Image: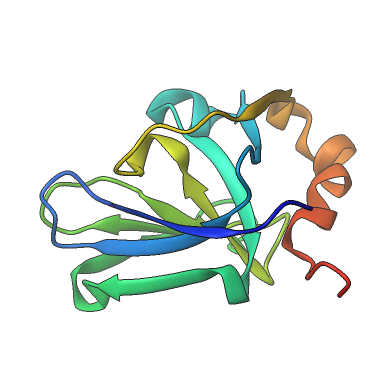
Length: 132
């Protein structure tokens, strides 16, 4: 893996801010599930250690559905979901690439979230720490 650099991002109103450590060209996923397709979420899934909430913890509201495992977090003021705890990677975070302050070159792959049960395991490696 290439060297990591912290990128900043946040919600529309700026009350929620985060940092995420990413390689120069991260692996990203566009999901067709009912949630992601409606909000245009582009997934950058990272381990816990590569994500920092910088501001706005008290501004977040949570929404869960179906199994209740995924923790969808929204800014209570503007309603934007900049990141969340995904069901596929409960040990990490999925950051919305569209909420980063600067655009990135990404390797974007389509993910069939409509058939989540059959495909979720293919994402598990993304929240694991890389070997030294």
